[in-house]
Length: 231
Image (cartoon, rainbow, N blue to C red; front, side, top):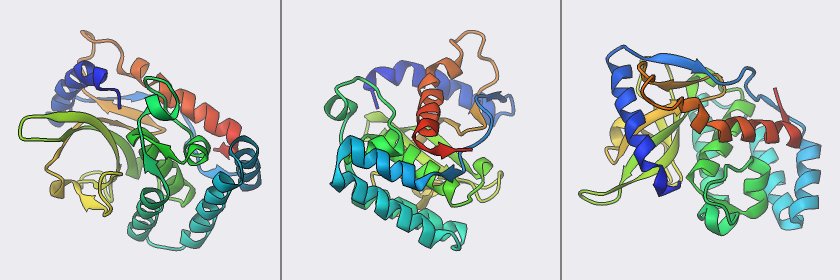
């Protein structure tokens, strides 16, 4: 997460307050959530681009997905969260990609072997979609994560909503376990999105369109499609 984004995140947090008050609107981003994978293509691309070690990680990913299909959703969350938190390392976009802000596809993420919070959250989101978890149940959530008594940083996690009215369960690269949002007082939500839409406030006329800021999301979805992750 680029800390220069804090200003617009603060603005969007104000919009999310409006959402809580019932003034929210849903902005449609794309149609057709990702829910299938050409595994042979994914493994071949990873081998060609990044070598045998990275291809082995994709093979382990494929095996985990195949072995987890029949599990209840809650168990799928734990499997997916544990897989990426154990197999992947955290590092910044500046180190991994020599860019200020880059959202990696799962192939790119596993190919490099490391990434930032967005990369962890996106990979977990796509994997749960491949496991049959419904798109409305999942949202990538931008939060402010407390790092001290008076300091916080921009961060992304994945939320699973058992029911629309229930609090989400949080998958996070910062901790090993999946926890209810109420058990994460260190996180303050800003806004959330998935393949169907963006959940923010309703009165956006005084701000730049939030979906413009999420052009990276549309871009990473397209690159995943090219890799072999398809609707």
